[in-house]
Length: 582
View (tube, rainbow, N blue to C red):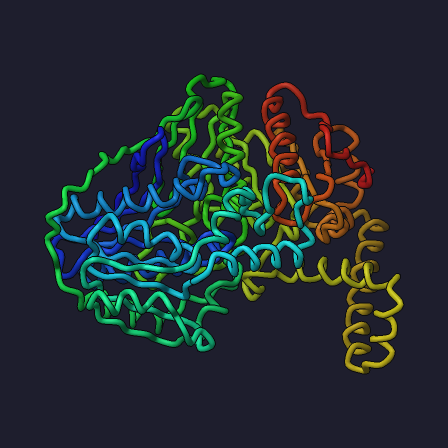
């Protein structure tokens, strides 16, 4: 089975990043798969990739791509004209698939991206159409984005140009345009259509136009959306839905389309004004290499593994924006997918969503050796949450890799062992529980709930026993001068000359747990500058708001630009240098 990655030009100097799952013989029409708009982009990525792999295994080619402003494509979601760019991109990739295969493709759109399909239907003849849990009214979709922002306490100010969009910002002009959209199509040819929808979605007005054009309409009610649309670590691939899709798409007739659609030439790399990007494979590990046009030759390259189980673009596209802004400073980077995550070359039904395991450290070291072979003088390992765990463990387990430093962001735990939950290890769960009880201790309603719920007494009792044990162990270690695993490991790393930098959002539960486990050694290393601490103000765990995300990126760019020259704690606007450990 052949898989290719490339960028397709879409006009106006833009380009979309695409994965082409090719086949030797087309037994059915090729399929264009369009991801959801908004935060569901990341949540549904594993499902879309799983569908593409299973289509390919069944003999049907598929193209998965990033709309402008998403993933590795060009553009920013904050641009007011992005809606037109999305439609133009969808038309361009549909044309490319048609010309490449000499067959009219089927088009599958998920959730709010279904609102983009009328533009394609009016321009291209399709072999089939799938709406997968469609938003049929833009007004409903924008309302849902605002609800997400309220739940996350991340609402944008009324005079701000963009909605926060659950971390995927949207210009208010784009939101206003979407609010005027409804899913209305009137093709001038019979277009067979499959709709997979939730049980409560009983009436879909857009089907009237498709029926009038003579197409065969099939509807399937499914309850899988709630599992599929969870955050990446908990997302459930809806296999029954996928089986319906493969059967339906495979039954559509192959049609040689006579329309003369433009076929943009794919590019193995994409060059912007200040950098080039190329896909990179090292064994079973996939990455995107971002290289500045003018490189700082002595600067270590930055390796950025997955945050949690999300793919290499990072939460709210953090890894992409960081890589491209690092390139503006002459620093190369690779944002990567560990072997079991994201776009790494797994076989069908072999994907997983484990945020923590014992193999990620080796995957990260594999990519580190690959970039050393490409000319990197050394590497800095930078990770968020589970990515920080993998970065820390890779530096420990592979001392032969020239690691210049570690940047560990919103660490919940640095240790995982067989038997631990792959999404929430025991160390992370303990830190989270401690933080929750600390926050509840000053809340009268929490005390009332405790007094009226005997089951909560048991939970609190278990917690207190575990805390007493932890405090006793820490005290015994101090008295006997025994060091904790974290103290020993920090000493090993810093003795090799590594600088370890921690960055936290406010109220992160991992901070107190880390300081307790680090003990006297952590305090001493902080005093002499081999460990530094900073805090990003007004930020949550994944830097949902654009302001907090940019604040973090600015700080990291400043830190990493000075990595060869200073190991002292840095502080930038919107950050606070921490000294609690000392």
